[in-house]
Amino acid sequence: MKRILAFLLVSALVFTLAACGKSGTDNSGDDSPLTRSDSPSQSQTPGGDESEEGGASGIITGPAVSLESVFAYIETGDTSAFDPTKLSEADKQALKQSVENAGGKIVYGADGSIDITGSDSTRIIIHPDGTYEGTDSDGNPFSYQDMHNWPDSELGRAVPEPDCGITLVNEEDGVLEALVSADTADQAKQYVAKLKAAGFTNDIEETDMLDYGMYSFSAVNADRIKVDVTYVDMAGTKGCTVSAYAPGAWEYDDDDPYDDDYSYEDYSYDDDSYPDPDELYSSEWPDSGAFEYAPEPAFGSGYTVSDMGDSYAILVNGGTRADIETYIQALKAKGFTVDSEYEEDDDNVVYVGYNSAGYGMLAEFTYEMAMIVGTKAPIDPDDR
Image (cartoon, rainbow, N blue to C red; front, side):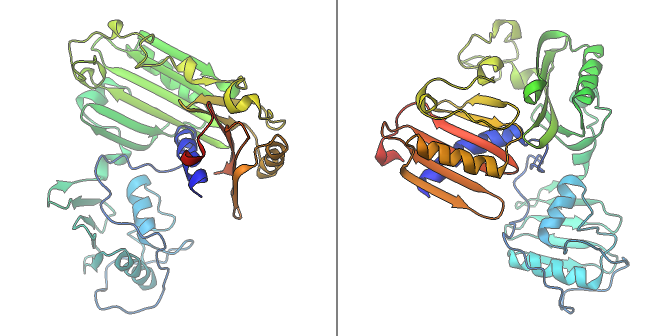
């Protein structure tokens, strides 16, 4: 298990890049307001001494209401499992049980409001109209309400709003980050054209690797505001992110990480501290380290190779679980059987093994993606 976990720490970094549009990431800039329960109760038992009759009516269909569904509503606006304006008594009791299982407390107001206090004293108040606000553990007010709207701030006004819509957006400390509802590469490129028309035409870095599932754009305007756009469509995942930076949030040098007087032109991609993106990704099977001994996959429609420092990680386009199972047998045939571990469940499979020279290989299918990771140098048995 230790060997598999060590490899998964590497693969998780790649999944973070590839799955940027697949999961709701906490972009609020605050600590999670409640402690989530890993196994929330779905009890539908009526009754409960804290529940009061409210003005809401209707019945939610689909997944049972739980604390997780409240987070999904707050973070993404998803009302498929939790709609605060349409809660039945059974829904209220299921949510009450889930909150209490997580160490929190919930009170239903006579006006239809929902007041949730977390185990760390953070608090969320959901009003009858579906709006929400809260206070942190120190009692300081904060609001989640703007997470789905392009900010009306100096940075938000300088950077055009994407026409295709916003899934999540957050601005903090001069950095605006947004998950954009771009379903196609053309939508991402149309937004890039809008950025160029708005003056983001300096220091352009544009990489079109759509044959391998990735497109990126970076530029700076005359006010030294920098914007990055990344679109990913690979291994069954699709998404687009937009990041914008005020001058003081990205212009830096080794002595002062927030030096507003530092010039972007003076900061070169040749600097080792800011690697060229073309060096981070390639479509060529590595010919060193563990890959010198490992077989190249005979499945999929190509792959993206990421340089992770001590290892290479490869996302295979179009790979399936059956493909990975076959590839695992090929690794074993090549001698990657030392200190090996194999785990599987209904949806995922992962295998780690080393060869006699000490090189390690991992083959994994999870999140509907096929991944291969190999070390660049032999690994000491005590470090596996």
